[in-house]
Structure formats: C-alpha cells, structure tokens
Length: 162
Image (cartoon, rainbow, N blue to C red; front, side, top):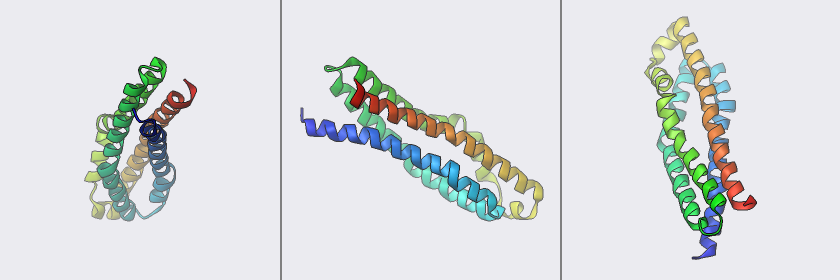
C-alpha cells in the first residue's frame, strides 16, 4: 500500500467535510440574512440560484467524501478498528446530508421554489410567507452543517487520535 495515497486521503477526509460544513454554514448564517433584507423578488431569485447551485454540487461532494472515508476505513481496519469505525461514522454522516435534505427539507424547498416572484412582489402575505419559509430553511440547514462538522471531527479523530 502506498502511504502517500493514504496521507492524501486522510487530508481530503478532513478537508472535504470541513469545507462543505463551512459553505453550508456561511449560506445559513450570512447569505440568508442578506436575502431576507433584500426585496422579496430579488431574494427569491437569489435563493433559487443558490439552491440550484448547491443541489448540483453538494451531493457529489458528499458522495466523494463517503468514498474517501470508506477507503480510509478499509485501509485502517488492520491497524486500528477504532480508527476504521470513526471513518465509517464520518462517511455515514456525510451520506446523511442529501437524505436529510430530501426527507426533512423537501417540503420547505418545494414551497420556496414554487413561489411566483410576481406574486411575492405584489402581495404582502406572500412576502411574509416567503420570509418565514426562508428563515425556516436557514435553521434546517444548520442541522446539515452540524452533521458535516461531525463528519469532519470523526475523520480528524480517526486520523490523529487513534
């Protein structure tokens, strides 16, 4: 086994979920408050853009992280069962992100994407609904960030602590 490859996978196994957690957290903590202060039609258009960008990229990053963690778990099994199990936990947490998004955030995502920008601009009720849904989405997205932080910490512990 090439140890340089193992070191590369260990670095990626820590950096990928850490960077993804930071991206998701920055969307929830920085982008969404800005969208809430923008005019409703502009905020809706920007949310749809951010959502579709994340939908196209983040599941593949999560799958790549799962593959990395699976390889690390396989390579570490003879050396340390605990490290191997931590990598398995890290990969499992990474895979939970798309599942959480579909199962728990699906209704909120569907409601936000179904809002008509013209109606949001004209109706105060629609604007309030949009803002409430966006706040709910932001809070639910924090759970995704927490899962990714758990994945990064588990990979870190598997690499350096055991």
